[in-house]
Length: 382
Ligand SMILES: [Zn+2]
Image 1 (tube, protein in one colour):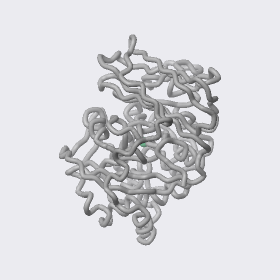
Image 2 (tube, protein in one colour; image 1 turned 45 degrees about the vertical axis):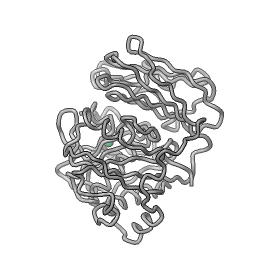
Image 3 (tube, protein in one colour; image 1 turned 45 degrees about the horizontal axis):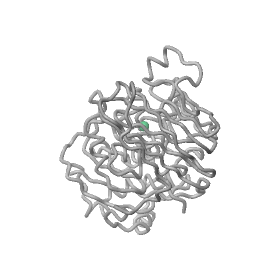
């Protein structure tokens, strides 16, 4: 189902073994990943964040489901990330984002929108805009720019947040600015959170073969596009629910992260989409609200119920892609591809990590996908 998957999921493909032909786990390489990233519980929790980099608009109110913000973007920003954290029960989306030159990179009417688009997409304008953004239940995020055709100008930016239906409460909106050029090589910290049903614990996961296979699978794919896994931390969270629903439990779970760096990863038993169907993994948003502890889109969740460590490595890679701003190469509705010209189209993209279902093909990220992943908030330059 397109709507559910647009939030950033990996659909379980029961006919294939996801990630069966990922590069084989290399013990020495795995050791290097873990040795380079000693396990220190929550090393960054509570550290101050550069106040210039984050601007908060607390408790903004909606007028007939709409709220506007304006903020300054200095020269030399590599990315602007917007995150809205609001009450559940309303779909939130940034429907308008205008740069300092008055160019709308996201708008309600970016071009022709037909009945099929309106039927398939709750907010067709933002999805079909030059800088695609998607909606979420109680959360909305946007990474600008998120493809090579978007070249926003500095200056005074304006954004409009839309909520449908108009919510009874307010939303917090965060603007995160990353300065400087996109790093040629990036580092992504991963903060693993183990629920009580994950069958892994903070004390033992690093020595577990399946866990190492999962982490190595992601490390190999990311390294090909110059993203190294940096610090890896482990935390047990007191959540005993086996099955996590995307709408109900997921935002509460992701809000448990206290981390201000990298990406938080929650290992759960099972993940259910809006219709109760199983998902191999899910991202809180595209991109996630990384660096904003306590918000409902601050991370990804991976189900332990499906596949072994290698299959979970493929899922972890896919959800990291969503978390760092990547969309599917093709949606369930094949009319919609991504906005990148170096990924194959449609079914030909089965070998890309961001193809929406698991498969037996060896997977890889494209160079443009790598650039987007290194552009956002969660990845630091080496
Ligand atoms: Zn996905």
